Length: 464
Image (cartoon, rainbow, N blue to C red):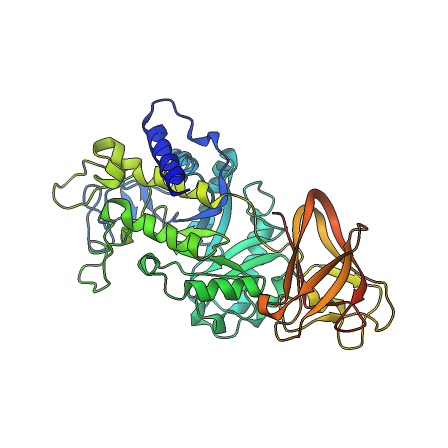
């Protein structure tokens, strides 16, 4: 298998160097999500961001690499179009748009980015940045604003009917209970691996391009997300160097090591069982974490680094080396959605024991549970997914501390089967289904060796 993967990688890299190769021939991976920064400006010689660190554009910019496009304007339609072509070349199907509040500079450019993304089959998720005065309540309002203003765009990212919103520096706020208001319409990710800090969130990500090299806490975070129906989206990056943008900064640098660093971080992400992989970054030039092409012959000789040597490339071929390598890793991750389609959806049951209503089985908690009327088989439990969806598998769970039992269940009127819930295996069973579009999932319980009722702590529905 390792030899096959190596051969596949070599073929991909070879294809990237051949003239006329259509990089978009393969399907884009919506699970590969690039952090995208629209904060740069270059209007009539008035620069935004490029002068950071006391630099004087156009030749002297606040970055350790120099863009192929020079110190560009994020609102320039030709720049946005080129960015989307490069993102398409990378195989990534989603960008995570850096957004700084309602009416901000970045908010004003979002319509143009969404339109260009739609032309290239790219989806747009949102990186909610820590603007002055941000609170949990204002974040809920921002999610409503973004969904209302941009939700009609075909590029607006949705999975299971829910948009995706990453909250940068989420630990600045301690009480996120307001997020419960948008749980059914939004997947909101906290920036942390501390599982005690993600109550009310729909997932976790890390952002830090340096930490990805050692992946501290990633396996624990992934296991927690898996057990609680959350999205695990660790962040990977090709390297980190902000010396020109932040002179005198003591932040460590992380060498690209000719691409070995990027490969190691991707391997760590896949080994951790990532649902999505968030890439830091497409174009955060100040931190030297970019995969956007950097000029192989920059101005001011000796002032800038280049991508020369990455994956054995040099000169102009090196400029797109990280796009092409991202395409390889995006293919390994794939594009199938992995979000629980049943979470927070409407449910009903033929009966329930007092204190254990059916809603407990779609609330994202393995501790709460639904229990049917006792001694009254058969009993049914139905989840309305809200819209037709192609469901390929169900995961049925009981509280992890419960003793073993076998429940007899049929799905959508099919033949009943016995499912063993074993605490040694997390009291969870997977039920594969023939992939077919359906708006609801109906479970019929006719037996339970542990208690005379149907029982579920969670029912999860996945597209694959």
